[in-house]
Length: 309
Image 1 (tube, rainbow, N blue to C red):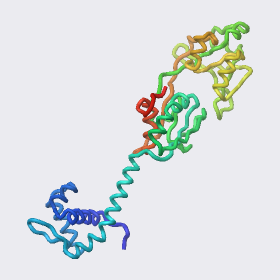
Image 2: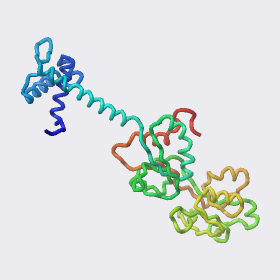
Image 3: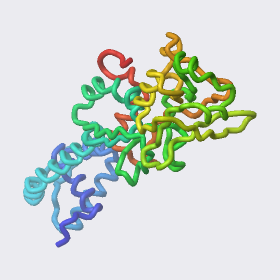
Image 4: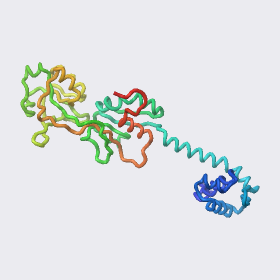
């Protein structure tokens, strides 16, 4: 015998159980969301299929036959268990649980993930965030990640991308001491005559060529200098030490510029580029845990506890 109950048999069995428990076609029909006549026809069809009368019907009440009593006693636990199982499945679908794997640039994690952790872990205790901090541009799907936070320039076309902040821009900066010793470049191309602190994209052989904007067009300058690093924070620290000219994101050096520790250079040629985005693959049904993480990153003020700074 096929262990899988056909849909028609299940519907008829469910109709019978509802009528048998309520002893009323009208109340059972209301419970099931069908008309009493349709329900009566369904139960009668079930009786014809099994070849046994299960209910005694009168104009005032409904009673079970002996066969009906026996069947109800056997199937009631199974139907109840099935209903509970489906209910638990729906509950698990609605309650965030499981692991969310996130790939994020380090600067993005500090700004958008670290501040939400207290509120998110309190609101979603059954969710595990598996976070990889890496400035490498990886394939989100092939890498087994559920979401990523990165700059807009390196997001795959088939991903959904949600802007998290304003546009950014790189700005060349140096200490007053460095400029006093080496002079100030008047044009980005003069940077090749200076000591620059270079940064290499993880996974790339050559250092990043500094990008500038002039007359509606972007152009690159392959700078040179005494230091190549793969960590932007280290590059910025070296810039503050006066080792050379750095090229950080402007917002990371605003305090240094305001305090006079660093001097901005070549701002005329420094144009904004797309900022940070939360991106994730298109999917028909999103796991509640992933949805909860996305909502938390987009609306941190909705999390419990103090608002993340």
